[in-house]
Image 1 (cartoon, rainbow, N blue to C red):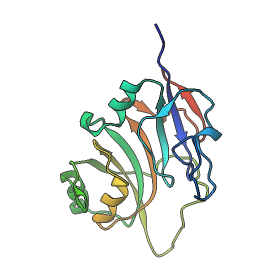
Image 2: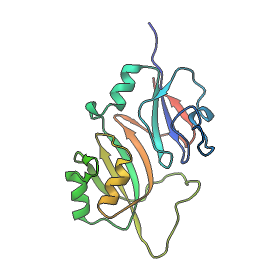
Image 3: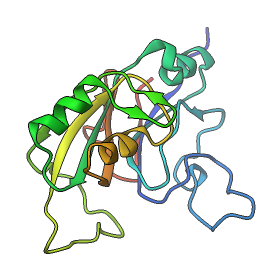
Image 4: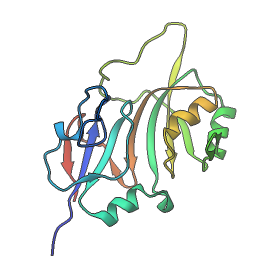
Length: 183
């Protein structure tokens, strides 16, 4: 009997969510710079400008279950957004937002206190005249740049985005740029 490998990785800002560099793209760190485990692949993606939980596995069935929108595995993001969304904006996110590629499923969303996160490098640009706040947003699908497009659609662009949870797996105890085996 073979054992499955499942890695919880805290992907830093500006790291490509793949093991090989982009041909003809800007030089950026990749997963290879952080993870030296043969045979594992990301279960889903996380944009270069997003941070947080990325699951990697060598089990194709588990990879599909995590990444395939058919399974509607919940993914929770902590989003620092521009401005302070009122209840109407939050309710719109809760009902689902119409984007260019269709309507999103309803999201679970709430305003939260500033989370105790690591500093981002480079830091989010601070503007004295523009307030910001944090929300927790849980979605059950994975359209391209979905959370960013959802918050922008309700008038509150995302400034920083950290995926905190996928299903029952969280970033608890996993520092940026590090990983732990959860298999």
